[in-house]
Image 1 (spheres, helix red, strand yellow):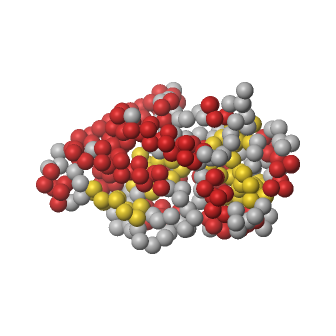
Image 2 (image 1 turned 120 degrees about the vertical axis):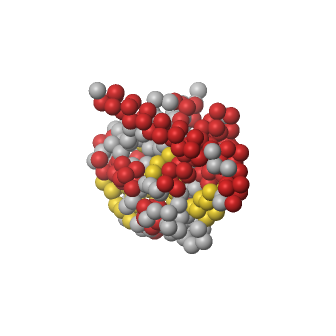
Image 3 (image 1 turned 90 degrees about the horizontal axis):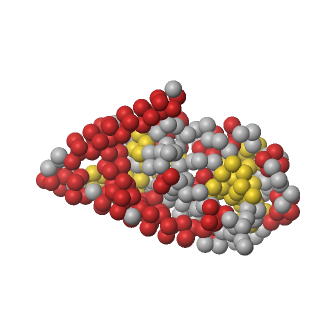
Length: 313
């Protein structure tokens, strides 16, 4: 019965999206030209923060893919920096918010506040976690052979991140802060043992912080994995529904044309360059924050990193 209810929910969501797409598509070209659909996203949280570049490029591609059907659009970053919590609050305030789209790892609370577009933008890559550490911790981590062993180490994270809910539910020791850049300083000051990062984040973060933290290193033997898709989120308003319908349609067009896969593979090659995953010990966690909206049955949207994680022959 739970499986049937889940399928019914997904069917209803899909039908609603189809209706919204159809309604949006009948907008005349003149109306679209007069009022382009506007997407305003947050700036990076710091000068070293390049975590979202791929997602905003993907946004542009999705909007371009259905411009003939939906009309003109505008995409730009808000002119002042804001953190995760502030950006979510802006979207939750409705159409008057200073930003109206974010790309975030989903969780139940976020899906209740904002309208998700349930397409995993990085095919679940963010849910493969490795650790930034101080180099003298590596011998201790080499002895880890179970999740219980790993739980002896404290993990630093930002308070609003979805990872916090997942790690806490699975019994890990957490040290929390709200400042993204401050977490690197806290690691350097040994306030916690491990800074858990997505495999798609860790290389650039190591490169941009190793001068300030000379002993900073990428841990060499462990991957922690949980299914954690990153979605686009928009306001829960009528305009947000039109935005979501356009985004869903555009991303699906990219998938059908092969453009999504091309972009994803290029992104993966870029972010994994220099991150050696071969033969690592993989510890898997359930994600209690994953809602029925997640397209778990469609393997296209999930990369298992089998080739990258396989031991070298």
